[in-house]
Image: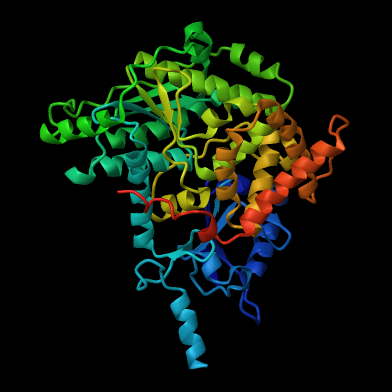
Length: 97
Length: 411
């Protein structure tokens, strides 16, 4: 399953300054949800300081998540099940990124 | 089962038009679709300027743009406002100022020039005159920059109406300078001066360094506005930013300046009035607007980028506010409204409050450990906890009980 990921507003600084990440997630029997995606990002993409991106199960407060240009609060947040070609954006609203 | 499904699909419609699917949640429960959100956002900017009646038609206004999301969004709002039809049009003459702070964070000349070039492209696209100012310039400013110049004679409330009327009659064409050629700005020559680095290096804590940078930045902006003949300076502080700034200011003992530091307008310089038109927008609204309507912004690391929560008082306050905001969505607007109360508090009360607020912040973030400071008495601690409770309990109260919907209460 593949979906493009994007970091903005300074969030990309934790990913080597790269904004766009087209990713292909390994297939698994159950569909991927956001919770698993965050764990996967942390293991595979995050270059430094994981505590500045994730806290507990979720993203750090102050980082917004958009799934296909819509607020993830409308999509069930961590329980949202990812579809093929979903577009996920992380935007940091914290000062200095 | 069918009824249940229907209910779910209805609940995801926009609260405004009730037709289009919702794209984002602004405040608890208020989901907007893309287009209604755009109208709401654009309207709010004009409403806040219309309500405050501070910027007169034909006046020169300097926009302080840092390249961050909030100030870039402000720039877009001004552009939108100036291109509207007559009755809704913004009627001032804008210019842009950007301060290149590369030296403060130890960037190389090449890095700084790359950032400047990126921003220059954004500014050139607007067609407004712009000024790119290396922060080093602040060291050469005359001391008079901090002085309060006499403000032009107080204008009565009716003057604004008369000015607008006159402007509309003359069709605005006389007052407006013809769209001028954007000022040709070469990349300013950045001298390899170490004075600024030395100054910042001599400051031991990140808290003080951020404060110092703030002050230097403000002086340079005010000076530029004065020398270039602007009478208003627009800053892009968002509501979230101001909530953090307010609690930070209390903690730093800047209580006496609180009203001017965080209010809509700041007249401490007399002839130059600072205006904060973005103070009704939360950081979330701005981030969504910029993303959905592709407002370009440039990420420039600052002194507190990638630092931990406890690195500075500013950072600690920010993490306190954003964490509380995650659980209680009206935290920011509550703190922001606290400003009205704090204006009437005595300075000594504010200063005591500052020490206590800091302690409470630290205590409320489970990930932080803090040594109890000896200067705080039981009474002061209780006072601060009271304030914390006040913020929390207000944050819990439903929005409608606390405020009127901003942006829709004025013509």
